[in-house]
Image (cartoon, rainbow, N blue to C red; front, side):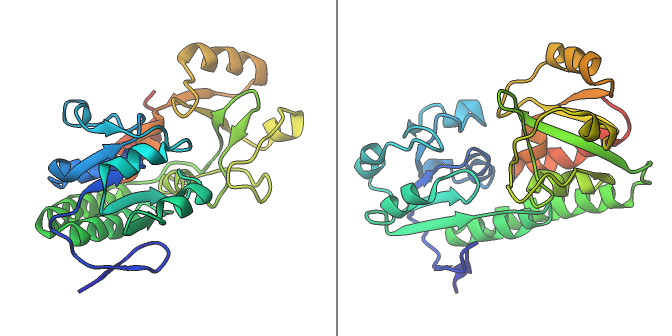
Length: 261
């Protein structure tokens, strides 16, 4: 049996895998599936679950991977993500890591395939099945919830320059689950933008994410005065992390839709 990643590459089960994860959310999912003992490397941004990942060797960041450190760990597998990791780095890793697993969830339901892929390749299928059952139930509950009025929201991930998310991103798909949509600001997945009257007139509220930029309530209060639209601080991990945190993220969406802040 083989399991297929986001690039259509087939991977065989490997019970003795030595895994380097370059995706913070997936590092957490691997731990949830009971695979922490096989994780030999992670990025400095792989911080959950804290006590479990603390002893696992760091190999740089998601964008600035230290290839020599990865090589020294002799992994059989490296797990990467199309949005998180840069292709030139992944190509270099493929020269000495036998198996590169590429991930690219775009919708909440893609978490099911992600868990099955990792559970299958790393022989944790029972744990993956249990997690998928819980996720599917939570997603069904979210979709059965009465929807409020549609909202047009600008989801901000950075400032100086200001950046947002396109309609093709996982974050936009999460927001769509509660009837919220993001503006079309061009072809970039994470477009830059300038504040102007036309943009503000086209949105109902602004969402400031706590990651990757560390927006705070102070930012939200100041921006609300500037643009004259409601501005809400949202938990970036709940909105953008795949895997384990995505399960909690579905509950978080229900709170968000209900006006929680």
